[in-house]
Image 1: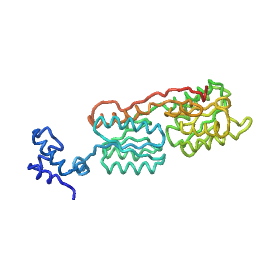
Image 2 (image 1 turned 90 degrees about the horizontal axis):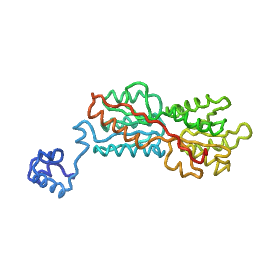
Image 3 (image 1 turned 90 degrees about the vertical axis):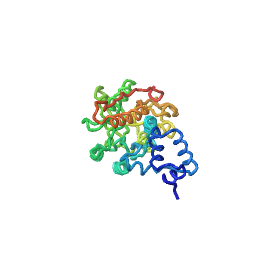
Image 4 (image 1 turned 30 degrees about the vertical axis):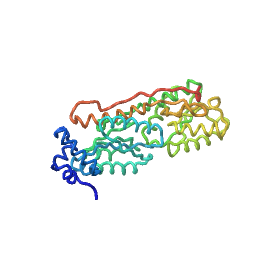
Length: 334
Protein backbone atom coordinates (compact mmCIF):
# COMPACT_ATOMS: atom_id res chain seq x y z
CA UNK A 1 0.00 0.00 0.00
CA UNK A 2 1.25 3.50 -0.85
CA UNK A 3 2.55 5.62 1.99
CA UNK A 4 0.33 8.66 2.62
CA UNK A 5 0.97 12.15 3.98
CA UNK A 6 -0.89 11.05 7.14
CA UNK A 7 1.56 8.15 7.59
CA UNK A 8 4.47 10.61 7.37
CA UNK A 9 2.79 12.90 9.90
CA UNK A 10 2.34 10.04 12.38
CA UNK A 11 5.94 8.88 11.97
CA UNK A 12 7.28 12.41 12.47
CA UNK A 13 4.83 13.20 15.32
CA UNK A 14 3.58 16.31 13.53
CA UNK A 15 0.32 17.42 11.93
CA UNK A 16 -0.66 16.70 8.32
CA UNK A 17 -0.52 20.47 7.73
CA UNK A 18 3.10 20.57 8.83
CA UNK A 19 4.01 17.80 6.38
CA UNK A 20 2.20 19.72 3.63
CA UNK A 21 4.16 22.86 4.46
CA UNK A 22 7.46 20.98 4.39
CA UNK A 23 6.58 19.66 0.93
CA UNK A 24 5.25 22.90 -0.52
CA UNK A 25 6.35 25.85 1.65
CA UNK A 26 9.36 24.73 3.72
CA UNK A 27 10.25 28.31 4.69
CA UNK A 28 7.17 28.35 6.94
CA UNK A 29 8.57 25.51 9.05
CA UNK A 30 11.53 25.51 11.42
CA UNK A 31 14.69 23.77 10.18
CA UNK A 32 14.39 21.17 12.96
CA UNK A 33 10.82 20.31 11.92
CA UNK A 34 11.83 20.13 8.26
CA UNK A 35 14.61 17.68 9.15
CA UNK A 36 12.22 15.53 11.20
CA UNK A 37 9.65 15.31 8.39
CA UNK A 38 12.30 14.65 5.73
CA UNK A 39 13.70 11.82 7.85
CA UNK A 40 10.21 10.27 8.12
CA UNK A 41 9.79 10.60 4.36
CA UNK A 42 13.09 8.83 3.78
CA UNK A 43 12.34 6.08 6.31
CA UNK A 44 8.88 5.34 4.87
CA UNK A 45 9.80 5.76 1.20
CA UNK A 46 7.06 8.36 0.70
CA UNK A 47 6.51 9.64 -2.89
CA UNK A 48 4.25 12.66 -3.28
CA UNK A 49 1.17 12.34 -5.48
CA UNK A 50 1.99 15.05 -7.97
CA UNK A 51 -1.09 14.33 -10.10
CA UNK A 52 -3.39 15.09 -7.18
CA UNK A 53 -1.48 18.26 -6.42
CA UNK A 54 -1.82 19.37 -10.04
CA UNK A 55 -5.57 18.79 -9.94
CA UNK A 56 -5.88 21.02 -6.88
CA UNK A 57 -3.69 23.71 -8.43
CA UNK A 58 -5.45 23.53 -11.82
CA UNK A 59 -2.10 23.39 -13.67
CA UNK A 60 0.87 21.04 -13.93
CA UNK A 61 4.56 21.86 -14.09
CA UNK A 62 4.71 20.71 -17.71
CA UNK A 63 4.61 22.26 -21.17
CA UNK A 64 3.37 20.40 -24.24
CA UNK A 65 5.43 20.46 -27.43
CA UNK A 66 4.15 19.12 -30.77
CA UNK A 67 6.62 19.06 -33.69
CA UNK A 68 6.24 17.80 -37.24
CA UNK A 69 8.83 15.03 -37.02
CA UNK A 70 11.04 14.28 -34.03
CA UNK A 71 13.14 12.09 -36.34
CA UNK A 72 14.29 15.30 -38.02
CA UNK A 73 17.42 16.56 -36.19
CA UNK A 74 16.18 20.12 -36.64
CA UNK A 75 13.16 19.47 -34.42
CA UNK A 76 15.24 17.42 -32.01
CA UNK A 77 17.41 20.51 -31.48
CA UNK A 78 14.31 22.71 -31.12
CA UNK A 79 13.17 20.34 -28.36
CA UNK A 80 16.57 20.57 -26.63
CA UNK A 81 16.30 24.36 -26.56
CA UNK A 82 12.76 24.18 -25.18
CA UNK A 83 13.79 21.71 -22.48
CA UNK A 84 16.72 23.90 -21.44
CA UNK A 85 14.54 26.97 -20.89
CA UNK A 86 11.77 24.97 -19.19
CA UNK A 87 14.27 23.37 -16.78
CA UNK A 88 15.48 26.81 -15.74
CA UNK A 89 11.97 27.42 -14.40
CA UNK A 90 11.52 23.99 -12.84
CA UNK A 91 9.26 22.70 -15.59
CA UNK A 92 9.32 19.72 -17.93
CA UNK A 93 8.53 19.44 -21.64
CA UNK A 94 6.17 16.72 -22.86
CA UNK A 95 7.37 16.02 -26.40
CA UNK A 96 5.22 14.57 -29.18
CA UNK A 97 5.33 14.38 -32.97
CA UNK A 98 2.42 14.88 -35.34
CA UNK A 99 4.23 13.05 -38.15
CA UNK A 100 2.93 15.89 -40.37
CA UNK A 101 -0.66 14.64 -39.76
CA UNK A 102 -3.26 17.21 -38.55
CA UNK A 103 -5.43 14.51 -36.93
CA UNK A 104 -2.48 13.25 -34.88
CA UNK A 105 -1.66 16.80 -33.85
CA UNK A 106 -5.26 17.26 -32.65
CA UNK A 107 -5.09 14.09 -30.57
CA UNK A 108 -1.99 15.34 -28.75
CA UNK A 109 -3.54 18.76 -28.17
CA UNK A 110 -6.53 17.08 -26.54
CA UNK A 111 -4.21 15.00 -24.37
CA UNK A 112 -2.22 18.03 -23.26
CA UNK A 113 -5.41 19.85 -22.32
CA UNK A 114 -6.49 16.86 -20.22
CA UNK A 115 -3.08 16.89 -18.54
CA UNK A 116 -3.58 20.57 -17.60
CA UNK A 117 -0.27 21.65 -19.08
CA UNK A 118 0.85 25.23 -18.49
CA UNK A 119 0.84 25.86 -22.21
CA UNK A 120 1.48 24.33 -25.63
CA UNK A 121 4.23 24.91 -28.17
CA UNK A 122 3.30 23.61 -31.61
CA UNK A 123 4.56 23.52 -35.17
CA UNK A 124 1.20 23.24 -36.99
CA UNK A 125 0.80 20.46 -39.53
CA UNK A 126 -1.58 22.56 -41.66
CA UNK A 127 -3.06 26.04 -42.07
CA UNK A 128 -6.20 25.05 -40.14
CA UNK A 129 -5.59 26.63 -36.72
CA UNK A 130 -9.12 26.41 -35.33
CA UNK A 131 -8.19 23.71 -32.82
CA UNK A 132 -5.37 25.92 -31.55
CA UNK A 133 -7.69 28.93 -31.30
CA UNK A 134 -10.11 26.84 -29.25
CA UNK A 135 -7.31 25.68 -26.98
CA UNK A 136 -6.20 29.23 -26.31
CA UNK A 137 -9.79 30.39 -25.77
CA UNK A 138 -10.08 27.65 -23.11
CA UNK A 139 -7.21 29.22 -21.19
CA UNK A 140 -4.29 27.16 -22.47
CA UNK A 141 -1.61 29.53 -23.88
CA UNK A 142 -0.27 28.58 -27.31
CA UNK A 143 3.05 29.56 -28.88
CA UNK A 144 3.67 28.72 -32.55
CA UNK A 145 7.11 27.27 -33.23
CA UNK A 146 8.82 27.77 -36.60
CA UNK A 147 5.61 29.40 -37.78
CA UNK A 148 3.94 32.82 -37.77
CA UNK A 149 0.39 33.96 -38.54
CA UNK A 150 -0.72 37.46 -39.62
CA UNK A 151 -3.04 38.15 -36.66
CA UNK A 152 -1.95 38.59 -33.07
CA UNK A 153 -3.86 35.65 -31.58
CA UNK A 154 -0.75 33.56 -30.99
CA UNK A 155 2.73 34.32 -29.77
CA UNK A 156 5.27 32.87 -32.19
CA UNK A 157 8.93 32.15 -32.86
CA UNK A 158 9.70 31.76 -36.54
CA UNK A 159 12.19 32.12 -39.35
CA UNK A 160 11.57 34.06 -42.57
CA UNK A 161 11.20 31.02 -44.85
CA UNK A 162 10.34 33.12 -47.88
CA UNK A 163 13.72 34.78 -47.56
CA UNK A 164 15.29 31.37 -46.98
CA UNK A 165 13.87 29.98 -50.21
CA UNK A 166 15.01 33.09 -52.03
CA UNK A 167 18.54 32.79 -50.62
CA UNK A 168 18.82 29.13 -51.64
CA UNK A 169 17.73 29.56 -55.24
CA UNK A 170 19.54 32.87 -55.71
CA UNK A 171 22.71 31.06 -54.68
CA UNK A 172 22.11 28.34 -57.30
CA UNK A 173 21.39 30.95 -59.98
CA UNK A 174 24.59 32.82 -59.07
CA UNK A 175 26.44 29.55 -59.73
CA UNK A 176 25.09 29.60 -63.28
CA UNK A 177 22.37 26.98 -62.77
CA UNK A 178 19.19 27.54 -64.75
CA UNK A 179 16.98 24.43 -64.56
CA UNK A 180 16.25 24.02 -60.87
CA UNK A 181 14.10 21.35 -59.23
CA UNK A 182 12.44 22.14 -55.92
CA UNK A 183 11.94 18.83 -54.07
CA UNK A 184 9.20 19.59 -51.60
CA UNK A 185 6.81 18.02 -49.16
CA UNK A 186 3.13 18.95 -48.85
CA UNK A 187 2.46 22.68 -49.41
CA UNK A 188 -0.16 22.41 -46.67
CA UNK A 189 2.89 22.76 -44.39
CA UNK A 190 3.36 26.51 -44.30
CA UNK A 191 7.16 26.37 -44.15
CA UNK A 192 7.22 24.40 -47.42
CA UNK A 193 4.84 26.85 -49.09
CA UNK A 194 6.92 29.84 -47.96
CA UNK A 195 10.18 28.31 -49.20
CA UNK A 196 8.52 27.67 -52.54
CA UNK A 197 7.37 31.29 -52.71
CA UNK A 198 10.92 32.50 -52.08
CA UNK A 199 12.29 30.14 -54.74
CA UNK A 200 9.80 31.44 -57.29
CA UNK A 201 10.75 35.04 -56.54
CA UNK A 202 14.42 34.30 -57.18
CA UNK A 203 13.73 32.50 -60.48
CA UNK A 204 11.49 35.35 -61.64
CA UNK A 205 14.50 37.68 -61.53
CA UNK A 206 16.47 35.66 -64.12
CA UNK A 207 15.02 35.56 -67.62
CA UNK A 208 16.25 32.12 -68.74
CA UNK A 209 15.78 30.32 -65.43
CA UNK A 210 13.00 27.86 -64.63
CA UNK A 211 11.81 26.16 -61.48
CA UNK A 212 10.27 22.70 -61.49
CA UNK A 213 8.41 21.29 -58.49
CA UNK A 214 8.94 17.67 -57.46
CA UNK A 215 6.31 16.81 -54.86
CA UNK A 216 6.85 14.02 -52.33
CA UNK A 217 4.50 12.84 -49.54
CA UNK A 218 6.78 13.64 -46.60
CA UNK A 219 10.00 15.46 -45.67
CA UNK A 220 12.16 12.37 -45.21
CA UNK A 221 15.38 10.82 -46.50
CA UNK A 222 13.42 7.98 -48.08
CA UNK A 223 11.23 10.31 -50.11
CA UNK A 224 14.22 12.44 -51.05
CA UNK A 225 15.94 9.35 -52.42
CA UNK A 226 12.86 8.49 -54.49
CA UNK A 227 12.84 12.01 -55.96
CA UNK A 228 16.57 11.79 -56.65
CA UNK A 229 16.16 8.47 -58.46
CA UNK A 230 13.47 10.01 -60.64
CA UNK A 231 15.66 12.99 -61.50
CA UNK A 232 18.71 10.79 -62.05
CA UNK A 233 17.05 8.91 -64.90
CA UNK A 234 16.36 12.01 -66.96
CA UNK A 235 18.32 12.73 -70.11
CA UNK A 236 19.04 15.71 -72.34
CA UNK A 237 17.03 18.88 -71.83
CA UNK A 238 14.87 17.23 -69.19
CA UNK A 239 17.81 16.87 -66.80
CA UNK A 240 18.02 19.54 -64.12
CA UNK A 241 21.32 21.18 -63.21
CA UNK A 242 20.39 22.08 -59.64
CA UNK A 243 18.16 20.88 -56.79
CA UNK A 244 16.77 22.84 -53.88
CA UNK A 245 15.37 20.46 -51.25
CA UNK A 246 12.79 21.75 -48.76
CA UNK A 247 14.82 20.34 -45.88
CA UNK A 248 18.15 18.61 -45.29
CA UNK A 249 16.62 15.15 -44.90
CA UNK A 250 15.24 15.37 -48.43
CA UNK A 251 18.59 16.70 -49.63
CA UNK A 252 20.44 13.75 -48.06
CA UNK A 253 18.10 11.36 -49.88
CA UNK A 254 18.63 13.15 -53.19
CA UNK A 255 22.39 13.03 -52.64
CA UNK A 256 22.23 9.27 -51.99
CA UNK A 257 20.43 8.74 -55.28
CA UNK A 258 22.83 10.97 -57.19
CA UNK A 259 26.26 10.39 -55.72
CA UNK A 260 26.05 6.96 -54.13
CA UNK A 261 23.56 4.97 -56.18
CA UNK A 262 23.67 6.72 -59.52
CA UNK A 263 27.14 8.17 -59.77
CA UNK A 264 25.69 11.50 -60.88
CA UNK A 265 28.35 14.00 -59.84
CA UNK A 266 27.53 16.67 -57.27
CA UNK A 267 28.10 19.57 -57.83
CA UNK A 268 29.74 19.17 -61.24
CA UNK A 269 26.58 17.94 -62.96
CA UNK A 270 23.92 18.89 -60.43
CA UNK A 271 24.28 21.40 -57.59
CA UNK A 272 22.33 20.61 -54.43
CA UNK A 273 21.21 22.72 -51.47
CA UNK A 274 19.08 21.80 -48.46
CA UNK A 275 17.40 23.65 -45.61
CA UNK A 276 17.84 23.66 -41.79
CA UNK A 277 21.62 23.00 -41.65
CA UNK A 278 21.27 19.98 -39.36
CA UNK A 279 24.46 18.68 -37.77
CA UNK A 280 25.26 15.96 -40.30
CA UNK A 281 24.73 18.24 -43.33
CA UNK A 282 28.47 18.91 -43.15
CA UNK A 283 29.31 15.21 -42.75
CA UNK A 284 27.65 13.73 -45.86
CA UNK A 285 29.72 12.17 -48.65
CA UNK A 286 29.54 15.56 -50.37
CA UNK A 287 29.09 18.20 -47.63
CA UNK A 288 25.73 19.90 -48.15
CA UNK A 289 25.12 23.57 -48.65
CA UNK A 290 22.09 24.58 -46.63
CA UNK A 291 19.97 27.38 -45.22
CA UNK A 292 20.64 27.60 -41.50
CA UNK A 293 17.94 28.08 -38.88
CA UNK A 294 18.83 28.62 -35.20
CA UNK A 295 16.96 25.51 -34.01
CA UNK A 296 18.09 25.53 -30.37
CA UNK A 297 17.34 29.23 -30.00
CA UNK A 298 13.88 28.77 -31.55
CA UNK A 299 12.92 26.24 -28.88
CA UNK A 300 14.46 28.26 -26.06
CA UNK A 301 12.75 31.49 -27.04
CA UNK A 302 9.38 29.77 -27.56
CA UNK A 303 9.32 28.57 -23.94
CA UNK A 304 10.54 31.98 -22.81
CA UNK A 305 7.60 33.70 -24.54
CA UNK A 306 5.19 31.23 -22.96
CA UNK A 307 6.58 31.74 -19.46
CA UNK A 308 6.52 35.53 -19.77
CA UNK A 309 2.85 35.36 -20.71
CA UNK A 310 2.12 33.13 -17.71
CA UNK A 311 3.98 35.41 -15.31
CA UNK A 312 2.34 38.59 -16.59
CA UNK A 313 -0.83 37.72 -18.58
CA UNK A 314 -1.90 41.31 -19.19
CA UNK A 315 1.53 42.82 -19.56
CA UNK A 316 3.09 44.35 -22.63
CA UNK A 317 5.85 41.93 -23.50
CA UNK A 318 7.32 40.52 -26.70
CA UNK A 319 4.93 38.17 -28.52
CA UNK A 320 6.77 37.56 -31.78
CA UNK A 321 10.35 36.58 -32.47
CA UNK A 322 11.45 36.26 -36.08
CA UNK A 323 14.91 35.11 -37.11
CA UNK A 324 16.58 35.61 -40.46
CA UNK A 325 17.94 32.54 -42.25
CA UNK A 326 21.58 32.22 -43.19
CA UNK A 327 23.16 30.73 -46.32
CA UNK A 328 25.85 28.12 -45.55
CA UNK A 329 27.92 27.18 -48.61
CA UNK A 330 29.67 23.80 -48.79
CA UNK A 331 30.92 21.45 -51.50
CA UNK A 332 27.50 20.47 -52.91
CA UNK A 333 27.17 23.86 -54.65
CA UNK A 334 30.82 24.94 -54.78
